[in-house]
Length: 204
Image 1 (cartoon, rainbow, N blue to C red):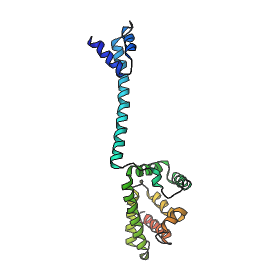
Image 2 (spheres, one colour):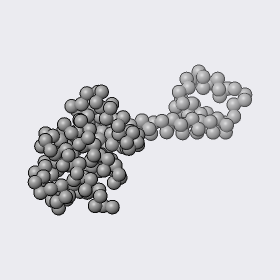
Image 3 (cartoon, one colour):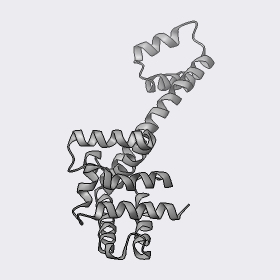
Image 4 (spheres, rainbow, N blue to C red):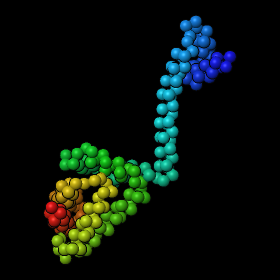
């Protein structure tokens, strides 16, 4: 009787109706050991699925509590969809799909508050470099700030020395980047590129 009740419970857990369970148990070909093995396999799969759902729920709860969800469109705020796709394509071509995905995933996981903090830190670095332009791109002060900028980049992805150099050259050669940096000073894009080139050359 206990074994029969156990079988009914297992089948019910797997979604079988009572009438269907009754027919299965009355079947002369019904084998308890074989049924238990099958039930174990099916329940294990169900447990995996439920555990996956639980992890998703936990992640959603954490996102809501900590506001860690960062819509990727906010990463590109201020750019048109055409500009965004053009920029993403350039990143793919220069540094690969892996770098693009890594960068976007890091940003999405930052959360709005953290992302704003990182943006502010970057802005402070750019302004400090601009303020030190009279000292020259190869000055100690500027080079220390470029090193700080290099570390700041790690918020978005890991960049090799070659990638850092390429990104620095993009700052003055890409119209969108140049326009962004010109708000600090008309000569800043070219100055920043030279400072980064000098920084990379001095590391060799």
